[in-house]
Amino acid sequence: MQPDRPAAVVTASDFKLYAYSVPFLCGEQADPCCACAPLRPGRYATEINIHNWQGKPAPLLKRAIPLVLAGAVGGREPAVQAAKTLEALLLPAHNATMDDCCRLTALLLGAPPAGPLPLTAGILEIISTVELNVTAVYTASDGGGAPSIDVQQIVARTLTL
Image (cartoon, rainbow, N blue to C red; front, side, top):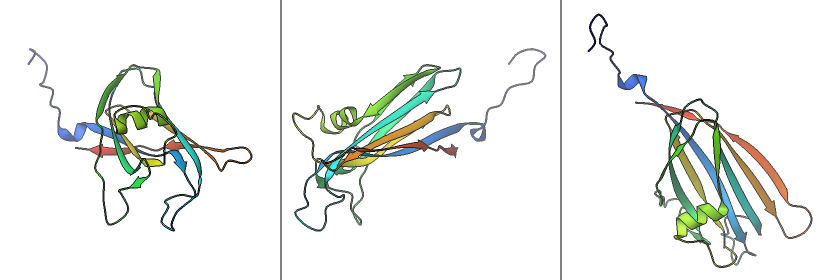
């Protein structure tokens, strides 16, 4: 408390968290051996860009939730999957970083894959106390012709405590 100033009171309702749920697809879906393959045959890649456009550092918490890991489908309903990774990062003001398939699979598998990666798919959850600009760049190829590319802006959900 300071003389001649009222006490500052911070309540839980003044604290906001911004959460981003970013789907990712990485690796190759081979020709399906059965009718239960999660995707059509092809090669898939995702790059997730995280930009702190604010004038202050952004503390980030990132969790990867695999639904398909190295070709094994573990998250098909009624099954559910929990986060397999937890990573904290302080992203400086006006800086950016990215998580791509190499980074995501190394986090999920414990090391980069030694060869071609079977399909890995899931959700990267990003939580911060600072609003961010998050985009996902998806590419896919069926082995013939030019690959497709799609860029998606990921909208934050505001979590109020």
